[in-house]
Length: 187
Image 1 (cartoon, helix red, strand yellow):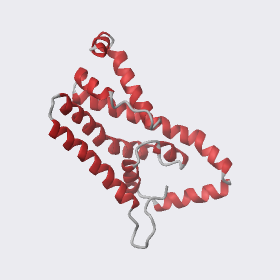
Image 2 (tube, rainbow, N blue to C red):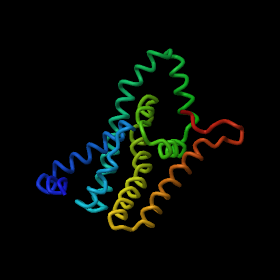
Image 3 (tube, rainbow, N blue to C red):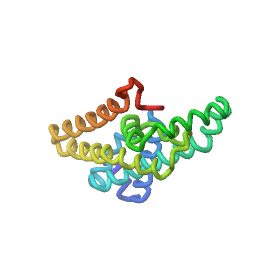
Image 4 (cartoon, helix red, strand yellow):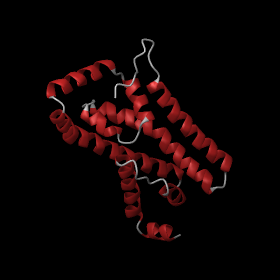
């Protein structure tokens, strides 16, 4: 109730803090804002919470992309010879499709934005595939939190299981070898 009273008095600040903690969670995998989601659902409802959560995750992913692009890329080119790194980037760009990058983003959501920036993946494609990959998790996490608040254990466990199926299914398809025995995931 402390948080509820504080956020009701400072609605904009509460929303800003929630979005920024979601962005921070997208930047640093040990950090999470999951404990805040039930509080946010109680305050703002599931739909607005899912939207704010998604906005924060996208903000964090975009920041990670630019850190990878403008700090990580030069650092890697310094550590690895520029010719070797550029050759590797050409191979990655030729052999990866949007669908594979989407599955990779879906399977490994944390910190992957840095890698997309380092390989200089097309920014707007990255934003689109990140949005598509994060959307189901934002919706499922928010509505599972709402179900927990309402005491609907079966629905909450079902939603959490669905999230696990999506995650492990994407991970399976990313790691599944192609018919010629080569892994599909270049990263």
